[in-house]
Image (cartoon, rainbow, N blue to C red; front, side):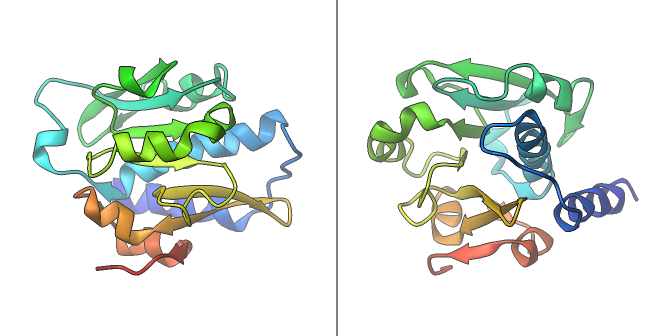
Length: 178
């Protein structure tokens, strides 16, 4: 029942128009909600979710969310774990993240970042242009004033992650699933 409720909320988020100006707060409020919902609709291997540890949403580079991401996940759980938000200045410091949002400030380093995280069970997400086409897992896009997303299924599967069929139905698929 709870899963159906979150699916309803997730689909509702996609169907209703969210005005998303270039760097408006509302855009990043919506993107924060997407990160939370991705956690609900992706399955991680058991070794990526150690017993007693929180589910970690990480931000790599300059944080475009500010407190919005913290507010979006405050008091919430995913996969029976509390959610923690961590900020990482460098990819070398990323440890224990389950989802990693790669900010625009890391654009020049994205190839290095993706190579460093290759096959790690970390869902990489960014709003950088062509992110999913270039090997990232999930790209957040603003299209006709709505936040949408593309999924590189091959990259997700290579990391040992399993996106739900509901999530895939809502995404623009990039790359060839295995």
